[in-house]
Length: 188
Image 1: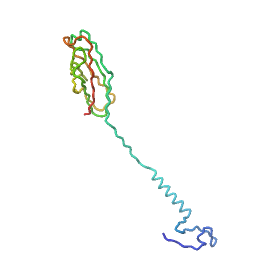
Image 2: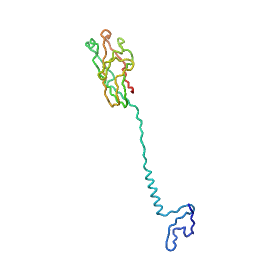
Image 3: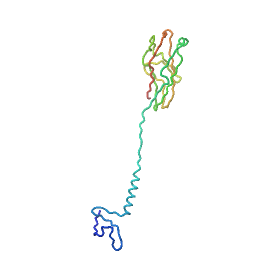
Image 4: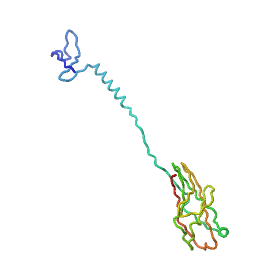
């Protein structure tokens, strides 16, 4: 920037010469004295620039985890087979309604936790049979068996049918308990 030198009378804005007063544009001790119109224009430029910069675009990110929720409408089944069921060899079919919600392809498996029941004799876990969706009844094992499969769903109900094989020659009178049947999800 070029430095301008003026006489003492030109340095002060109150000084008038030839009947006119003027506003000075000069650098005095490395400071700039600006005219009012120029100052207003600069303030407007800065205000517009500030307004333009006051808008900021931001994105939103979200991480959705794999979701698999399983609920069963009963915690246990209690059966009291009558004489005709024992003679025929099966209890009446009992149903657990399993409610499934998932955001992935899934498979539902079932397994028993022990190889025998507690009771008057060691009734095998394979005497518990299950089916789902009209499939044939399959004996439960201690290794997981696939019950059914599905895709993303929200509160989808899948009924699982159970029945117990009875043998009048082995199933002596008494109370039997099997604990526990485990239903598990796996992702396909």
